[in-house]
Image: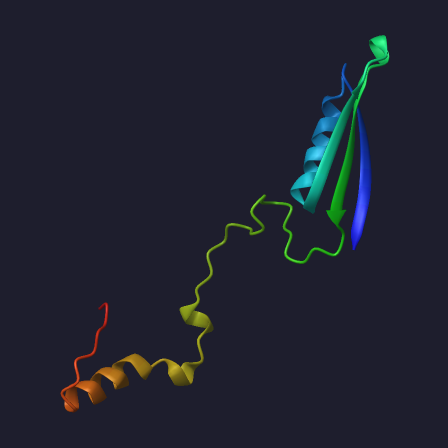
Length: 104
């Protein structure tokens, strides 16, 4: 679902607000960001209007790329019944004089 979030970040001493906005941005599917600087002397600030998807599945705040960086052992997830498929394939093809192309 499309959502809108607005951040107002003071030009002077707004580091905490920048960090808060960056944390939010890392955890969302961002569609559009509009920014506007408002000049008002010592009260000047940046205003950011952020359009994002609130029901974005797969976001992981720990990574801007949507994954945690942990490696997945895909071979461990295979069905045990199919584990011997490669060796059985080689036996059958060699028996029938068909050359099997394997990387091992």
